[in-house]
Each structure stands twice: as C-alpha cells, then as structure tokens.
Amino acid sequence: MATSFRLAAAVIRLYCLLLLSLYAASLGAKGFEPFVGRVPASELTADGLEGGYRQALLQVLGKLSGYPQQVEALAEAGQLGPVAPLVMVHRFVDRGAGELRQRWLEVQFDSTLTNDRLRDLGLPVWPLERPATLVWVAVERDGQRNLLGLSESDGALLDLMVEDAAVVGVPLLLPLMDLQDQQLVSVSDVWGGFADQLRPASDRYGARQLLLGRSYFSGGAWTTRWLLSGMSRSQRWESRGTTLETTLSAGMRRLASTMAAEAAIRPEEFSGRLLRIRVHGVSSARGYGTVMQYLTGLSVVDRLEPVSVFSEYLDLNLSSNVGLRGFQQALAAGDVLRTRNGSGSAVDLELELQGL
Image 1 (cartoon, rainbow, N blue to C red):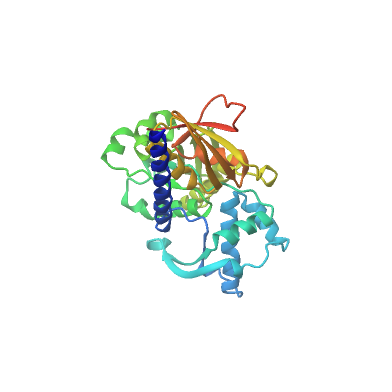
Image 2 (image 1 turned 90 degrees about the vertical axis):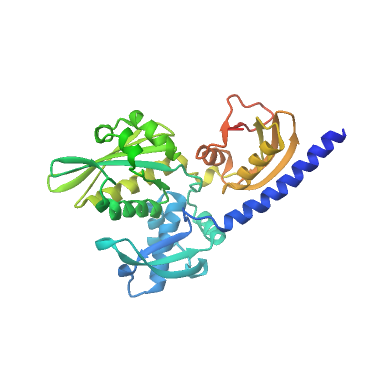
C-alpha cells in the first residue's frame, strides 16, 4: 500500500514538472507558424495595412482549415468579419535571395481569436499536428537530369518551395544532398518514382511521407509530375507553369489540398463529448510522463485527466475540440502513440506507447 502511494505521488510530481517544461518549451518553439500570414509588399493596395491584414488572414484561415477556396468564397460574400481585432503585431521583412528576394508584410494573429473566427465561419479544422513531408525532385534541363539541390544555384529555388509549402500549411523537409544522400539516391530512382528505393536514404530524416517530383520543359511550359507516398494510399498529380518556380509552387498547393482532404475535420464532426482513452505499454513513471507530455502538447486536446494507472496501461479522460477522428488524425502525424487493434467496449480508443 505504501509503495503504491509513493509511486502515485511520484507520478503526480513528474506530471506537474512536465507541464511546466512543456510550457517553457512552447515559448521558444519555432518552425511551422500557423498564425502568421505573409503578403508581398508589392501587392498592397490603396487600402494599405488594412488590405494587407485581410490578405494575411485569408492565408492563415486557409492553412488552418486546408480549404483556401472556401475561405475566399466567404470573404467575397462579405462574411469574413473585422480583421484588425485579430492582429497581434505586424512587421516588414526581406525574404529570399538574388532575383527572388522581395519585401513582405508579416502579420501575427492571435491564436485564440483566430480559432474562434475559424469556427464562427463554419470552416473545417485541419489539426496542426501534420506529418513532415520529405521532397525529392529530379529536373531535366538541356537534356541533362539532375537532383534538385545538388547545385548551389538551386538554393533560392528550394527556399522558395519551402516558403510556398509553409504558406499553405505543410511542414516540408529537404534532403541535405550530402555524400550519404548521393551514394544512396540516384536521379533515375526519383525520375521513375521508385519510392521504395528511396526509403533507406529517407529514413534518416524521420519524415512520415515522401513526395517525389520530376520536372521538365516541353511545349513552351514546365511540367512537374508528382507522387506522394506515405501515410495513406499513394497519390499522383501534375502541375504546370511558365517557369520551374511556378510549377513547383502549384505542386505545394496541391500537396496541401491532398493532405487536408484526408485530415481536416468538418464542423459536423466536432464533439464536446469526453473521450475515454486507454494507453498500453505504460509500466513506469517515465512512460506515464511521456504520454502526459505528448497528449497535453497536442493542439486538438482541450483537457486531459488521468483516471487510473495500472501495471501495464493507463486510462484517461480526454476532451478534443475536433472529436475522436480529429484526435486520431493528430496522433497519426506523430510516432509516440499508435492505435491498438480491437478497442474494448469500455473505452473509445486503445493506444500503444512506442519506443519505451
């Protein structure tokens, strides 16, 4: 009895410390910026900052929902609502290099108010937990095929592609193209769309899915044929443009819409019902802390309460702002918890802790 009491007390102390560390870490988090919109300064109209705020909010709502066309339609119908109250801060920044360098208006929106606006407009919610996508592109120029990134001159183009992906809400990874990559990856593998051949080289980046592209100039235009391989079934599409930059940018927009179609949660799926979750493989205070830290940090989790701790599993009550399917979509983007086959009738979802 005394041992059980000491273990429970240790678990509670560890949980409190983990919450504090998670909060501190979140203050310095960088990378994917869901509530930041960027608008080229050259596109600002006579409305000035007010018009720039509006364009930036359209961009943010587009990447939060995964449905920018729906956002545009609401704006055209005059249903967007006031924008200025949502703005936290703005600044002008220079981004890009060489001929691609330009000045941007960067607007940071309040996350709580923006999420409220998203729901008030009846838009879907695309959970912020999104799988990183590693992209390999082969380009044919002047009769020669090479991997994008092997040449230093590709740097500005790659930066632009990452920026285009960020604008539509997709975390993108680029290969280092170092000696290890060059030994394991051939341009013919990428050109032929042989995703399985690229797995050994791609594993080092920890990406959940691969995007392969082959770009070529024909008939007065650039074409890129894409293959997305990873979390669900493989998908293919094609993008075209007058320049290589525009066809790659179009590919990023299609990538975002493809991912959102799988993961975005529509309003009718939202549920305030408390979910009962059972996590297996939790046999120590360390495992307990890992589960609690991970779940507390998910954007889709509003409230989390431990119910009972047993020798091999943990029962939790969990409230998710996007319901059970939205919670499952957020989990699928990570590698800490995996769905366990055959959920019992006593719980809504059974999970398995990985890696401990």
